[in-house]
Each structure stands twice: as structure tokens, then as C-alpha cells.
Length: 292
Length: 324
Image 1 (cartoon, chains in turn green, orange):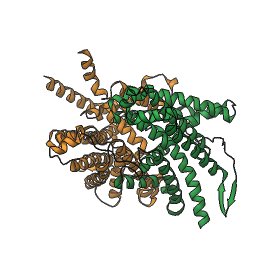
Image 2 (cartoon, helix red, strand yellow; image 1 turned 30 degrees about the vertical axis):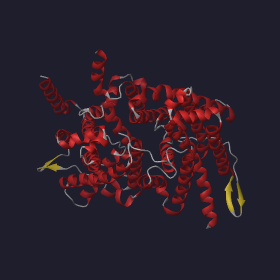
Image 3 (spheres, helix red, strand yellow; image 1 turned 180 degrees about the vertical axis):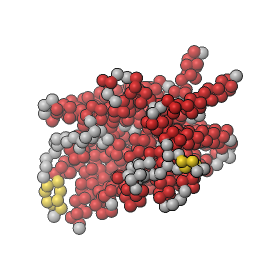
Image 4 (spheres, each protein chain N blue to C red; image 1 turned 45 degrees about the vertical axis):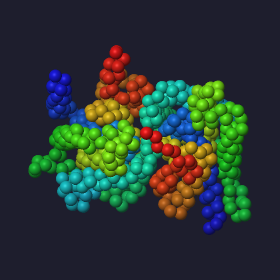
């Protein structure tokens, strides 16, 4: 009983850590450029297929991933910012969000067109196998995912808090005009957040697709959960996204095992609705004021 | 003069829609019927999003609620013409409930809240086989023929062309009702809610009530369309009521021009009819448009929005503004 619960919690944490990676990117984009990236799930799905493309021409996994990272930084970092966000942002938050929805539709259908509708298996960088710790079966894979995600998230936190560039990024997010006065190249800082988001999404793809397979409609549920994680934790707090992601991963797993497997995907949504009804600023977030 | 021109154009289009089935085969008539119903549902969303400024990504769920409600009512022995208002009412009531999160959160939060609601409805329809037939479709609970087509005053609407005229009549009716609603003080209040909720509140507009109503009326229209969608397709499963369809409905509204009266009609035509016209016009080596159409459509919407976020109907304004 306890062993089952512990096992489910650990694998839930591992899935949740992947949601957290996507959620952090989401939060980053929102903070620096008011972009609600409705295509976040596709930013994870497309790199998986780019990587499959590189693997298909016989490249070793590590090179394929490195090239994927570069391609995705180019397309979803620089390209997305210049082609979609920059022209749309002056029209407001909502039109930009709708443009991102159109982008997500185009990416989904484009991948379906090129790679077909069937799910594809992706090789795993993490070792297979299970170890027992006080009677609880723990898979190496779950531990690996957790370690990689935590290192990335901690590294990002440290980068933002301790380095000059990181602090300039934060300043650009909190007060762009003030940052400009201080001689910070705000546009460049915003570009860095887009690059960071693209990298986080590609790594999430590397971690998630060996289990959940690469399929053109993978992005929908993933993006939704990333957003739920960001909201549940508090949209204006980075560590909130982490907490939200982990919480969703665990609750989802427990729902699937003890309550109703067919409603597993609904767990995040129910939690999300409860949070926005009773604490719309999120569990860790700050309240934002309404302006006239 | 301009009003006269507009009325003339409207009459011409309506006349074309009435005579069109004479020159179309069954599938063309079916598509036009589908267009009528999606235009109704998109009009509901335009009310919620375009006029009241409340983001909603759950319109397909209400279409599904209407379709399943009317089918299950007919199965229980309720006459179709009683089932339609009941199904509309069910969608209206659920829309009212969905409006409550909108009182707490706005914009993108609301988009995801409604999106989540759509996923929940979809999962419920798919998983509760005993009620809905699950992913096997309504035929599981209603018999192989599915939802029967109704008759009106003893005249059966079984034939596709007759049912099309019913759909077209319902579109005209809904269009008229929405037009009247928008010209009423309620319609003005919706626009006030969209443009500046705080100021609207200071002018004694009850923004709580209007937010809820915007959702409920929009949902009710989708439920109404769904109630006719069921007998149109007769056999259906949960798949037309998923997220992709809600997104399509949203893009219909946005492409036509969110907050423009005829936007939904044009948007629905672009999404539903254009791929089939393209099939006839384009060379065969491009392959069937239903495979690549949504991809091209997504890109086209992206380009349109970056250039002219007001949608197609805003292009004349934009050109005029540029000329001056």
C-alpha cells in the first residue's frame, strides 16, 4: 500500500518535473513580453520530430539533440519572436494569444502532413531498469528526469538571480522603461527569454517523448498542463511553476491509479479551476491590481 | 443609399443560398447545411468574444451538449420540436455556470479555463458510454439509424435539401435575433463590458450579470446549432466536439472579424466551404485539401492577424485609414 503510493508519487514527480520545464518557459515569456504562448505544447512536440529527422539520417543521439536544440532556438526563439510576437504585441495580449493559437494549429497540422498521424518511438537517453529503496521500486528513468529537471530549473534560477545578464532580464520584465534608462538592451533580454524557453521546451521533448511517444497532437494536453502548472503555482513566480508542475504530476498519477484512469487528464483541470476560483493569483503568486 | 445597397446585397446572397441546392449534389447541400449551423455557433461565440470581450475556447463543447441533449431527449420520447428549446436551455444553463470563472479571471486565464472545460465535456461524453455511446458514437444508444430527422407540420424533412432549408431558416432566425439583441440596450452594455469593464461598472452596468449572460447566450446559440447538427449528421461521436473544433470556431470568428456582425458567417464559410472549392480548382498533384488545408489556414490566419488583427471585414477600414 505504502510502497504503491510512494512509487506513484515518484513517477508523478518525474512527469510533473517535465510539466514544470514547459511551465517555466511559459512564465518566462509572460513575464518579459506578455506573451501567452498557446503553442507551448507544440514547442515541445516539434523538436521531438526534428530530432527524429536527424536520427533518421543516421546521426548519433547526442549530436541529433544538439542540432535540435540549435534549430529550435532559431525557429522557436528568434523566429517566433521576430515573426509573431514583435508585430503582434502592439495589438494587445489577446490578439497575440490568438495568433499563437493559429500557430499551434499550423504546427500541428504541418507535422501531421509531413510525418503522418501515427505515434513514433523516440530513443531514450536515460538508462532503463529499476532499483528498490526500502521496498519501493524506483526506476532510474524517473530519478534521471527529476535530477535533470531540478538541475536545469535551479541553474536557471541562479542565472536569473546571480548573473548580470540574468538580473538585466529580470529588470526588463519588471520595468522595461526603467531598465532602458539603466542602459539595458531590453529587446535583447527579451530575446534571451525566448531562447531559454525554446531550450527548456526542447529538453522537455527529449525527456517526455521516449515514454509518451512523438505524435502530432502531443502538444495540446502538454501545453494545457504546463499552463495549469503555471497558474496553480502563481503566474508571476518562477518557483510557483515548479511547484505547480510537480503537484499536477502527482495528483494526476494518483487520480489515474485510485480514482478513474479515464479521467486522469481531467485532474489538472479540476485543480486549476479550484485554484482560479478561490485563489486566482495562484498558490505562490502576488495579487495584481486592476487598472482603469 | 449605403443602407439600400447593403439590403440589396443581403437579399442577393439570401436568394443565392435559396437557389444554390438546385445546382448542387447531396454533399454540397450537406456542406451548406453544416455552414448554416456553424455560422450560428460562431455567431454565439462572436457575441461572447467579439461584443462582450470574454474569451471562450469551449464553443464546440456547447455544440456537443446541444447535439447530445436533443438526441437523448428524442430517444426518451420527447418530440424534436420540444427537444430543441430544451437542449438550447441546457447549453444556456451550462454556459451560465461557465461564466462564473469569468467573474474571477480574464483574458488568457479565461481562455484556459474554458479550454479546460471543453476537455472535461469531451472526456465525459467519451467515457460515459452508458449515456452517450462513448467513442463508438450515438448509434450505440439510439440504434443504427442514429438521430432521426424531424418533420414540420406533417411534412418530413428527411431529404437533405429540405433539411438544408430548415438549417438556413434557423440561421436567418438566429441572425435576426442577434441583430435585435445587439441593437437593444443589452447589446450596448456588452460592448461597454468589452471596452472598459471598470468604466462600465461605474455607469451602473451590472458587469457580473452581463458577463454571465454573454457566456450563457453564446453557449445557448451553440446548443441551438448543436440541436440541429444531431439530425443533420444523424450518427456522431465525441470527436467533432473537441478542442480542435473549438479552436476552429474561434478562428472563424477572428478571421471574419471579431465584433463584426457578419464576421462569423464569412469565417464559417472560409473554414468549411473553401477547402472544397479549392479541391475543384487546384491541380490534383497537391493532394486532397483536407490534408493540408488546416495547415495553410493556420498560416494564413497568422499572416492576416499580424497584418490586420481586426480580421477580413476590417481590411476596408484599414485600407481607407492608410489612404488618408
